[in-house]
Image (tube, rainbow over all chains, first blue to last red; front, side, top):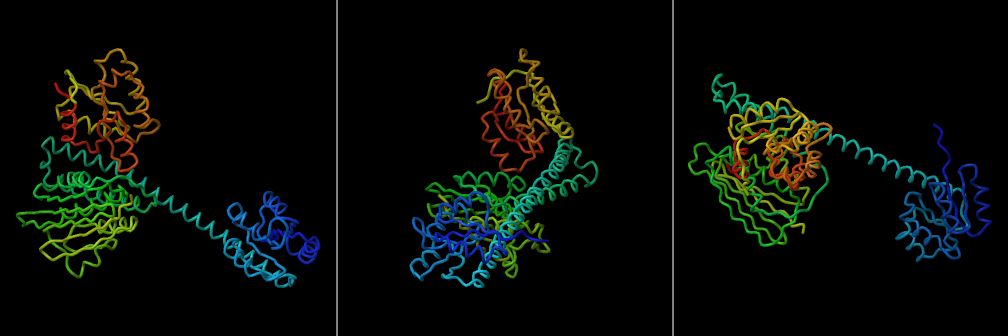
Length: 359
Length: 139
């Protein structure tokens, strides 16, 4: 593959330098010259060059001033500054504000300048390649997310129909008409639905959009309890929610975090426990929300405590998917939250979450 | 506030999924809350019905259970048309959305729509239906 020659723009008020440059390099590069910053800008407006060489000392606009002026409009070309004298202030300014790649003293050495242009061009290619790669990755990532998302929706619709049919069977008093088959269908369907919901939560959390809305913890917690407690009417909830100020946060992620933790607190109760209880304490201030969720359930083995936030970690005895706490952790990462857990076997578990107030 | 309703009460189901139409109409039938069930497989057909009976309010439903994701005209498109219905029609025919969606955007959009009295999740729960019935109809 032959690559088209590197396009170089050289700006210098001294006509002789422009001519000398052309004479030395016209075979290697496609050269454009301009005798002032204004003329140089005109060239940039008409075609995209890869390397710009500018003389520092020019009337009206200096090289550094020119580079500064095109910093946002033409960020891509690599800049080389030429100057006849070593002015440390100009040098510092060039490096700090002009995004200069090389600094070359006049009169230039042909080989040195040639190498600098070559390196500059490599830097240009690397920059563009990297940007293209990032764009490509973002695109495939986005497509993958959308694919998983829509597949989950498509999978869920018929599943929800199945659950609807089971409900009808119950309503018509046929639930026990075929041994335990209906019960098994129901339990499998619920499990599948749970996985689909977790998958959706995971991918939704992965997308980087974050919203900032006003969170009413009392209402949110009550809604979540309503949603999950229908499976278990025995558990008693003790809420101590103290929210004195407006709390701004990512409503979806906070709901996912609390939803997973509260449903776990309900799910992992001891069957033998007479007084199943879940205490939820929230202290929301202008700074953060401190949330404690404590249950008197099964508890977690000490050696498992470190692994519970890992994807697909499951224990032999429990009916988890290995996704819930992983998603909690991921969601907290996205909103700069923290989670701590303490637990003793057969006594219960406490999760402590801190979420910053984004208001 | 419960509207004054007289029997017979009609409910309209709009859902492109024929199985869900079947399931939901059966659930409504067993709930004995409504006397009449009108079913449509597309929002367009439902609109035609409203147009056809625009001068016969007794034929219009008291409650519409509207699916969100449907080909061509979806639930939100239907709501856009519904917005321009005569006030009397809007007063008579209340709308609840019924969907399996977990899409946060859809959920927010449905909750924000002033004409949607409630977003119900599939599968339709007889309890939820009864709640809607009790808070919106007295007879």
